[in-house]
Image 1 (cartoon, rainbow, N blue to C red):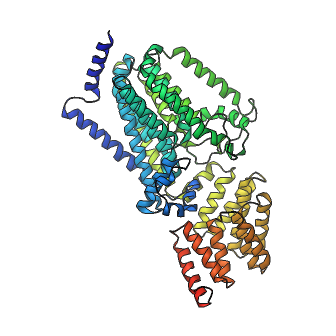
Image 2 (image 1 turned 45 degrees about the vertical axis):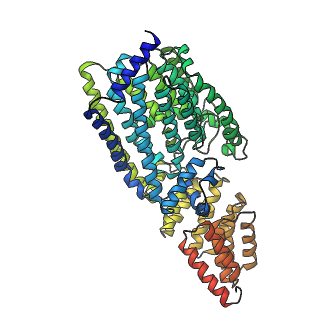
Length: 588
């Protein structure tokens, strides 16, 4: 067939699939889009009541920066697109967690819609096997619904800080859709759109630099029918992306690799050996996404023979060899598998991250996994296809129920950390956060118990151990056992002498024991450096007020309020201290 006839044939297919004639087909599309949005909102609605957790508290630590921030002023940030979305939430409703959660839910629904349109475009422009085209509806409707409803996505949606993943994957999928839809008809427009999406994705989360690799795989396996010569159609795109990758390596990757905190101080060999196992942990979670854990306790592998890492490596090599052997006969399954591995590679390789595994890292790889599952299901023929449809409907129903139940867990930080401690009892960090949740509710005894349990399982001399000792000191101070509090604080500071908050807490405890001079010296240690943290300002301001140094207290409270302008307590303290300072003649 000539190139002109091929273009005409594809044009006809476009009118049949992307813009189907008849109001009924258009209505069906609108109904499906509405179903995605309404179902996504329903199953995640409990999570909108959830508080900030873990890294979310970074917003509050620098909340004053949002008060005077401009969208243009956020460009210098490592992830400016994400920060702009946070600023939009803040401008809308301050630091109301529900608004941040609702935005995440909306982004997840939008990503499912983009995925749906991407699949439709693939059936127009892709060179797909007949068994795939025969099962078109299985892919067009099944893939976005599996992506939307799977409980494995709960952490990505319910955890506010995972906004990075939601935005980055949204731009990632948009880039794929733009490429597929415009590759043949408007190659230079395709290149410009993909490059724009590539930049926005990497400015949301750096690991999405794999987009060009995925586009090349998609082009070769599905759009070009495994014919390398067909890739010449995409030369405008590849030439632009080559420059984009080079710039991205300099602007995005290089600062991370050479930053002092790169790798969080972990051993990259141990991290890599452990990751050979994590690929199959992730596969297990995708197969059975119902026993989820925010903070899994994973034992590292220090050698290939430890904890079965060698079997993980062998299995990975075998899978990749199978893909190389059968990719021509199984292009869709091969692309799904390679998308899974490519999307995981940046976080599941040799570059060490703080956690060995996290459910939110499966947000994009899940698309590849579900594509493989549907590809296998497409082999079912004849009357048995109804069984496949029934099985898919059952899975989707179970996914929806599972996601709703998991969203309920995320709706309350105490419930969330109780669930995490139950599943990772030998890991210190969940105990630390569970104690914090108790402490914020005024349950001092329960908080102390949780922190004691965490201190017993924590690695001696670790940062988490120091945090738990500091928390135990806080619980003793709450019970007015200041001597014991001082002992815990001093133990923590031997491990981590740079913990400024613990220095401030030690200062307060020392003053309660009438060791005033030592207390002010501890405050000096807490205030070292150019930036004094919000809680240090508050604690020192309170002690300055008690000491009758009202003007200095006013300064600390004002600076604390600059950091957290939403704090009603600090605003009251500032007003009281200002009035006292004026009465004492310390302020005009």
